[in-house]
Amino acid sequence: MLMLVLVFLLLIPAFGGDLYSEFVREQVKEIPLSKAIVVGNGNNKLITFINPDCPHCRKEWEELKPHLNRIKIYVFLFPFKTAPESYPKAFYIACSKNKLKALDEVLSGKLDGNPPKVKECPLVYEHINIAQKLGVRSTPYNIVLKEYKIIEGYNPELLKLLGVR
Image 1: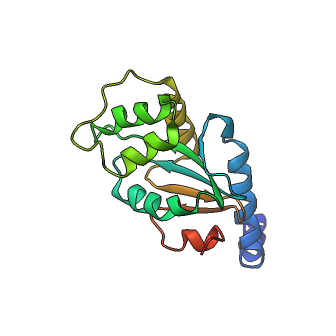
Image 2: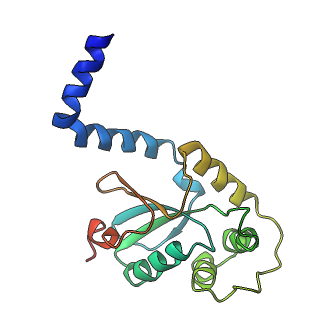
């Protein structure tokens, strides 16, 4: 057993990138993209887990929004109980007829201090379960599908990884 661990440790530097990509690829297989809120129609694909009140998610959205013709974003909502407005905002996004408009209103801060009065939306709870199964603990949590790379937190290099900058 010790020998196997040593061999594995020796191989990580040589094949680390490939192992990492394969790990992420396997994680992505577990994500039911049919449950996502899909915005954009480009070829470069991103899976993102966001909290409606997360300032870093909002900054990221402002950078991604102008490129929706070149990227497709699979959005999963991950509201936190510590942010009381995040649940009604998530319900609003998930159950709106125009999800792009609702997403933009929320992430632009237009509903801050005055969250929409909407019914609970079961899709939000499905998104939370998906996030928890993946081990998502903070937002934004991004997976760039082209490279099978996970980016936790805001990263100004995201647009470059998506091939739009």
